[in-house]
Every structure is written in C-alpha cells, then in structure tokens.
Image (cartoon, rainbow, N blue to C red):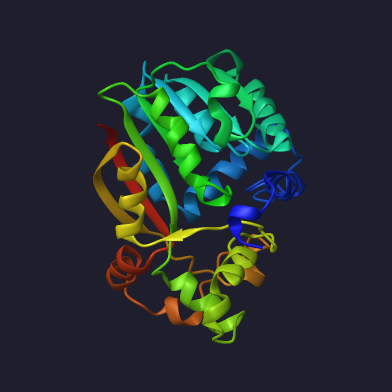
Length: 277
C-alpha cells in the first residue's frame, strides 16, 4: 500500500493512541505541572521551535495552526497575544489541547477545530490569516498537496506560511536505513514511516529534500523565502525515556560548533518559510 492509499482513519487512530509528546512528563496528565514539564522538555530538545515560530511577532495577529497536537505551540501563540485557530485530526489530541488552554486561562483565545486538514474548508470558515503554521504535520497525511490547496484559501497577499516537514537527506534517515533497515534502501519509505516517531508504526511519513520542499509549496501558490535544516537528536533513547539526558558517545565529545554545523546540513527538520503569491 502506498502512502496515498492509506485511509485517513488509520492516521487518526495512530495519533489518538499516543498523541505527540504525551509522555514528555510523568506528572498527572491535565495538571499545570504536567503541561509545564511537557513544554520545558519539548523546547529543551528542540530549541529551534520557538525561534522558528517567533511567537512574539504574531501578537494581535490571526494565526491558523495545522496540527496542534497537545497544544504546546498553540498555547505559546495565544499567551503572546495571537488570535489562534487550530486544527488537528486526532480528537484525543484536541481534547488535551483544550484542557491545556483551560489550565492556562486561554480558552477564549483559541478556536479548536478537530478534523482532516485535507478537507479544511468544510469545517473551518474561510477567512484570511496573517500566519499559517504547521510543525511536523502535513507529511503525515496521505495527500499533503490537498492540505496546501486548502491553505491557499486562507491567505491574503501578506500571509506568511511556516511549515516543518521531515528532511530526507538527514542523519536520522541514514541511521534508520543502517540500523532498522540493515541497508535495504529499496524499502526506505516504509522503514522511515514505521520509525519516524517515538511510537513505531506511523502509517504515513513523507520526507523531502530542500528542493522538493520548495517545489511542493511553490506548486500550490506560495513563494518560498527561506529554507533551513535543523535538529539531530543526540540523546541515548534508553536514558531519554527515563527522563535522563545522556548523549550518545559519538556526540558527547564533539565540539558544539561542529555538531551545529552538522545539524544545519543533516538535520531531520526541514523548515520552510513562504508567503502567499
């Protein structure tokens, strides 16, 4: 089965079973302490996210977020004064994100819209937004191009689009190919999907080169202004799942400037900034 043939319900079931970052804290789910710890851990491991999102810039602006997960970035857009509309396929994720907004007193600043972004205009009123933001989401839907066709309806001439998709020419792809795949490159797409997230078995995961990411956006009416690559995960998984931050030996002794240079070349996150044409 190709990614395009995967039923969207299968994707929904995968994320409902384990919403993204739900295990970033051992505190009681739904408490302020839990959400605080989830945010701290997420931005510690992925410090480029707040830089990319630039939450403060969108104060007083309208933000449409595609894929809120359990709401870490959503909350930060709202607490910095943005008017946020957020969408997620996973009803379990939206439930937790709503709970999070209540905990922080931001429920009235966020409109939650559960549903399939490939059919966005059927459940989110069409109106222009200043920022359309999606971090690590559209590469998990069977038809990313349909999402982008929908997003074009929500733009005005000054709309900024910020999207993260996974980078094919990355350290993580090479590691999966060599470890999980034993070098079987002919089955790379399936291996990447199964091993792309913390919970194995993700049904859809597209990856893109810089050129392919740019082409994807430009094909659907966006002008790409900037592309960047970020994020190599350096920690030992067996320690990380126990909330310990111990780097793999080959990263431990590497000078930080060299590690950062490698991240910017072979990182897993392809960051695309574009504007509506």
